[in-house]
Image (tube, rainbow, N blue to C red):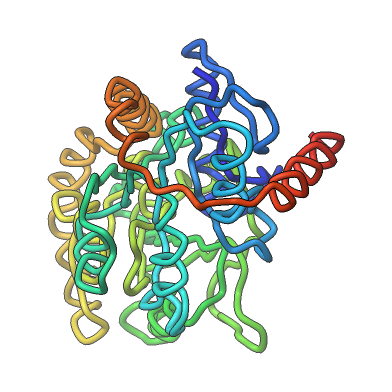
Length: 349
């Protein structure tokens, strides 16, 4: 199959969507399929819309480009739309509406959590061909190799990492931990490390701050610690705690958004009011939490294989999907314009 993924993949540390596209691309290529990132070739079998907001640096095509491609170049492609974003995550008021509008071009929709799927169904997204595939990180980088478990005779090292700086990422929680470290009870018991980007005018004076890392460097740094914490709210999935879980780190998490679907069996839920109590709970039972992490399931290969299975399933149903797909009536002048536009775009393939 030839599969077009709508991501302008970035090198170095970036967001979870970028990591998803890297991991899926590698898996598909290793499985013998061809992957492209622009809608130029005339024989694309699968189109995967990942970021319809054209102003995003990681978007390589959007729903409008897909519509043009189907109408002018190749109506035999099956269109999938992966949704991993929502207004609730960033306290905005336009993303859900825009993604629902963008979704009108999709034959199949894939969400990263049941929580996110239910949210969009409630807000009016089409209910046909909806699926959930949980996200996963690359075990080449994120694995428990060389993880040193807490021995109870040293400071408990707590870590988190974030690329984004939105307030819902949990910075109030990290600030709270930073203040705990200065208290008599905790100063000789815990240590906290933040990896990634901090919001402007925000400082964690008692913590270790490390600039964004990715790949092996990030995995190695995470494994220098004993316990992971995420304060993130309304996460559709959240790559950060997945990477930590794959490293074998038990996770302190808030029951919010899709996070619970990823963390419920692999850590301890908390609120800021009972965080100290939950840290002590981990300290008293650390061995049993480390044991649970040995079965942590979320993996980019598992995720990618589920995508491939779904691609194959719908390829077999292609005729029915295409026959039921409404296409825009285009007059000859507009059709000629679109053909020229696509031809010009091919020079930048």
